[in-house]
Length: 293
Image 1 (cartoon, rainbow, N blue to C red):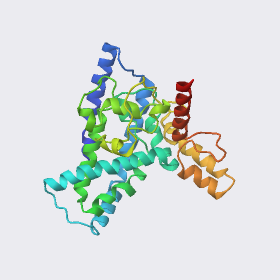
Image 2: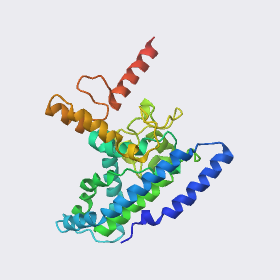
Image 3: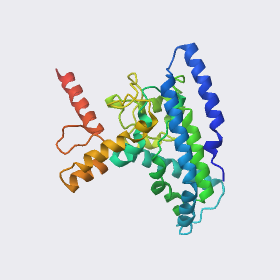
Image 4: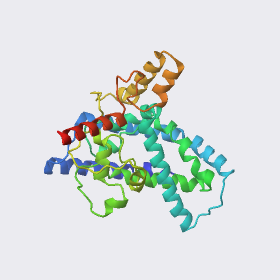
């Protein structure tokens, strides 16, 4: 069946052009031609790789479905359950992609732009299509039909396009349940208090339930804690892989090498660099000390 998120590409480009026009007129948000071109190149590469792997993905889904745990059917209740399950799987994968080194190497380039606009939504990794299958295969294994899983995944991706913008401010009670531009601006922030926060896809409730929610308070500084300053798609796609593997190959033991692959980004055996959690703890301690002084 066709990928709905790919069929939506003309709509993505039309909305991107509209946002760029409004950004210029309103003076809110920012576009940079080379950055936008890099994001579009990343998006095209991701689409081609996803298409190339489509047969493998579908084959694994059908194999898992043959061993399904439940008979869920295709009725309204099955679609509601799938909506919740798929969004929870997305949250799990997205959070893991920020907390496991080898998954972060695949996901990091989505965060590498220092701008936040609809083109950033298209800055998709060339290697995340290889990391998603172990998570989403759980859905056909539970009993959701493969074509339903692919449809719901596409709906989630389409939804997440519009939340990459600075033109939309707060959205009131809608933000209690759903992911919004305000929530996702936080997710793309390099501010210490914003690191590894708001991982939700369509819903924000998982972040609220599992302690990873952070509201937008301070102005957001977009990009990475250490920006890469390049518009070369190849470097954007693979520089974090190269850095991680270089550290693992020069590790003093297998345990240390595994740490670079499996522990959170920023981990180091001697504590010379900090993970997001450690940075947040330091910020909390400094805030507490300032309050007492």
